[in-house]
Image (cartoon, rainbow, N blue to C red; front, side, top):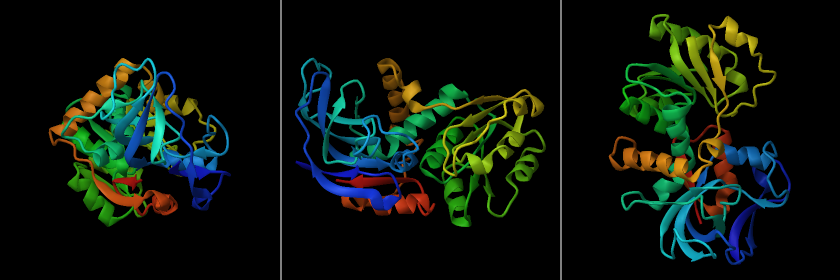
Length: 325
């Protein structure tokens, strides 16, 4: 038996139950991972509330990313052996001391990346990788806007985009978060609670607007985000922290300047093993070089997952949060 956080009914953080569960031996094509650190993400909140239905129904173990060591391998697995240091995105199912994972999901960790770093950056870092390098391939000298610039994805995004020569504008909720975003490569910060972010973007860019807007907020920032994008630019909606965008009006893309819009997911971009390995190698390279640092600003014991969720939803957190089993 191992300790885990399970959800028996959808709802607020109070539905997160700390209990013991049985984990069977790994089946064919699986590896068993002893978790050393577990990432906490807004995606977990969506699963907890039932906005994203868990594949196996209720009850289920929450969580979408973790890092640890391989302690057992199932038949047909040739890539991993006991003792390998790995990190992966596969969820739900990560809020537990040990679990079985499909062997095509973990990637081996280089020696210069810790378990805690890996758990804090796999989902967020791989998301930033595809956002910047594939969904809309940024180039030196471009200007982009990212909402929630001081969040887990935001801080990685600002550093990486800055490293690539991009001019980064970021919205944040407080002066403290603005300072944090600027310290991580964000060139211009906008206090969205006090300022009209569209007017500020126009002011910052001299009316030229942005090549792309990366929006993880959703309902509260749409359709205003479209007014920040130059003609033929890209609207990248990759989250819904304030609620989903309802009744997306595709005709707005025409009237706002023949814009492009997309709703990408890591599951799609990393579906093929070769793509996942290439994305992870790119991420590990920028982190290993020091160009991108992974700020782990909150750590919680596994049993305190409900507090981690309360802090995340109240927007009291910055950077990444992890659970220690």
